[in-house]
Length: 76
Image (cartoon, rainbow, N blue to C red):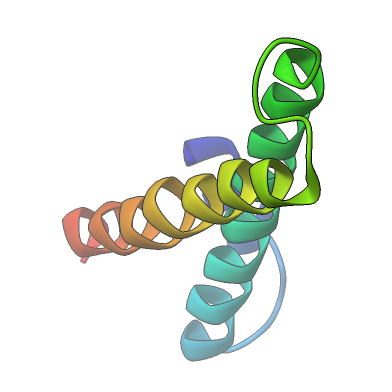
């Protein structure tokens, strides 16, 4: 998360837009990581689209959004 924050912080935009951009990028990155984990495990468990949505959705929301909010909370 620190790398994403440094990437967003280097942009010349307002503080509110930086926070929103950070959260959006963080959610998408963690959703992609969750999807990648599902892609590796689909042969053993959860081989349907439901498994893909659960793996990417839960990772995107809990790690990406909630984790990002806590990260920003610690920063400010």
